[in-house]
Length: 144
Image 1 (tube, helix red, strand yellow):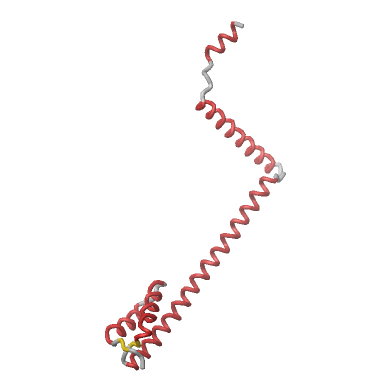
Image 2 (cartoon, one colour):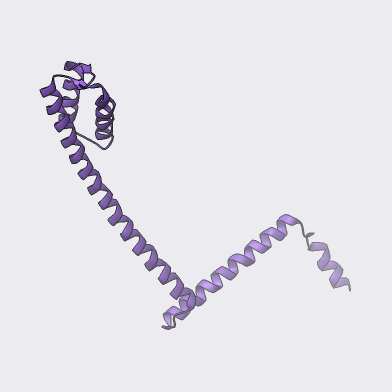
């Protein structure tokens, strides 16, 4: 009985913080034991469900990453194609407006929008020059 009293005098009361620390220690220990067991099984050539699941997830992530790379490449190609199409449209409108000698009033907003989108997707200075020349030199008139 004296031994029990002696041991109780050294123990600390269990508070929430000490309980929390003990539980974290136990969780960490269990995680390490499971990792060691997985390593041992893998070393012995035995594949556990956990390892299979991890390998499947890794393969799935790799496949998704490849598909995303392909999609990003396709998006870049589509942007390039749109840039070429917009450049051609600006060039066509440029020639038509120069031949007419004015910009039709009902096409002005469309022409400005076309140019803005062209710039937003990285259009070059050639489209800018043609747009600026039309806007600065040609009047806006109602189309007959």
